[in-house]
View 1 (cartoon, rainbow, N blue to C red):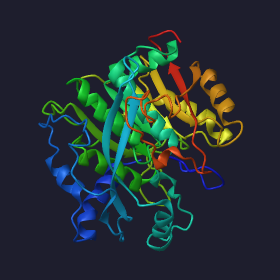
View 2 (cartoon, helix red, strand yellow):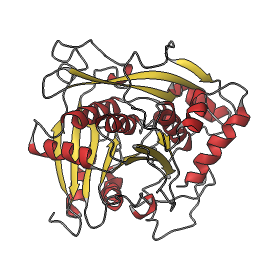
View 3 (cartoon, rainbow, N blue to C red):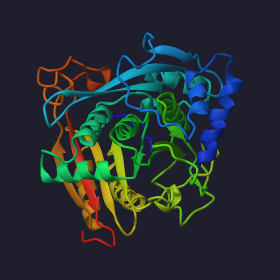
View 4 (cartoon, rainbow, N blue to C red):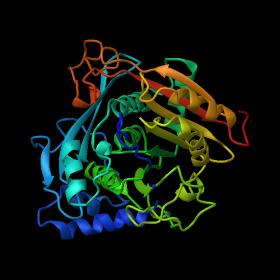
Length: 396
């Protein structure tokens, strides 16, 4: 999730190995126990526990609760409860999925840790916050996965159908991974279809949090690579990789290096995802708050197309503030997508008074979250940008 305003744009960047090193290094950083570690070791492919938790199923703790004080290898971390509440289009009853989220306590503390512990005074802490667009997209995902393609405009119906039918979801510029976690939890609750959720971001600590949250919520985790998945019968598996869409495509560069982390960097494509062989053609993309620089919108459009199956194409669902972060970005993005033969539809997302977060039409409890308030203190409004690329096997 990129931070608005004048701060440096955080782009997503390459190598699962860097994340695995971070996870391994954590146990050396502090003697205190990290609850996600236990879940990591227990989230075996054999587990088929339902991932959609109610408030009564969550561990009874006071949230947020401290997990890690911060050290040389990891920033300060807490475990928080994040209720994702949406109104069902069928009956108006609130649908609630409670997530446990591993995150930094706040962006100010994260920046201080980057500046003093990692000597990164130009570090971007924006990934450490739950942004309104991520919440709005998560609510849309929960509703769509439960309601199917009923109601709404035709593009919204098609987007909902794409979410439910997809075998693989990719959250681009994931930050804390709120939308991807909501997808994983909702998908596991509706059927036993095997799926993956892949988190992509440039920031390795964001990926650490996303994968730790996945494990904490009982989601199986696994690497990205050409591995035999025949023994993995988990309903959904979470993976992560560093990614930077500003680089040449991975086909054109294989040894680029991120100057900050000294790790190999890729501009990930569909081929690099190494999706499990049971269905590598049906993919949906999720993203929020990624439209920041007008000059980079052509690259972003190309990135989305490259992550979808080259023959079948597919959908990308992007949540963006109703008021653009940077003027001209949306227009440039639409032009970039259409220039590649794609289609774009922009749909206002429901506000808190209609999406179930404020009572679900009077039938649920009020759930106004800190993340619903934008950086300027206003109650956020969000639009959904539905992007469709047809692929060479389908008409655009």
